[in-house]
Length: 125
Image 1: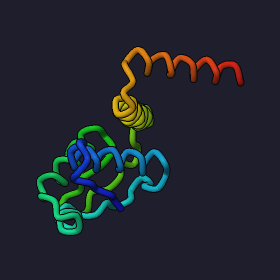
Image 2: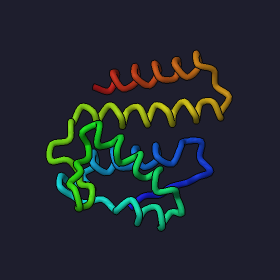
Image 3: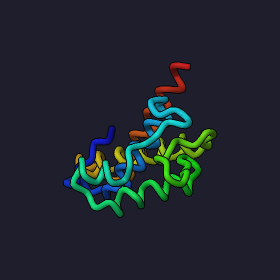
Image 4: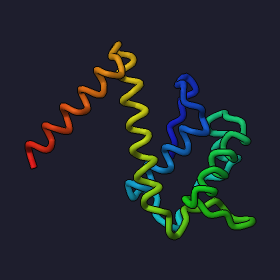
């Protein structure tokens, strides 16, 4: 279900959070769907169980996951839609900034490119 890469600069727990948000937002994880157990994910990915638990707890605090004692963590029945969208955008922006830095673009060049794309998009409406 999850693709975790310890070589990335993003911590593992954040990779899990981002992927859960995307799966919920994209409809691959529906309300009430059970997530893999902490132990199961930790074994599959050779990750400390506390890392998985931290990601799940943070997602629960955001209102995206629900915990029921003795049962698997599930997707909340009514995840806040604005929260999902804002986190998706935040992830996309982080990736874009990282790509711009790798390309050697300055902040001003990145902002100028964003403005140009926004203007081009408005011209097509």
